[in-house]
Image (cartoon, rainbow, N blue to C red):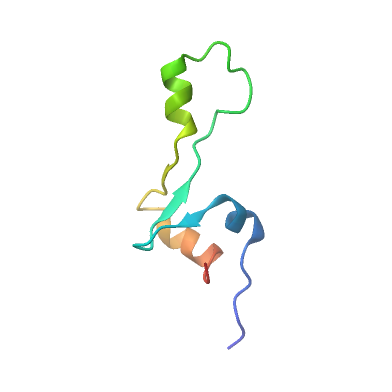
Length: 65
C-alpha cells in the first residue's frame, strides 16, 4: 500500500496537540478590523480546536503530523 500524501495547505494551518487533537486559527481576523470590538479581536487572535465532527476528515489530510 502506498504512503498517503499530506495536504500541504492543511499542514500549514493545523497543529497537533499532545493528545492528538488539532489546533486551528479562528477566521475573520484579517481585515475590516475597525468595526470589530477589542474583546472580539482578542478572542479571534486565540486558537481553538477543530470540531469533533471534522476531526476524522482532517486526520486524513495530515496523516503523519
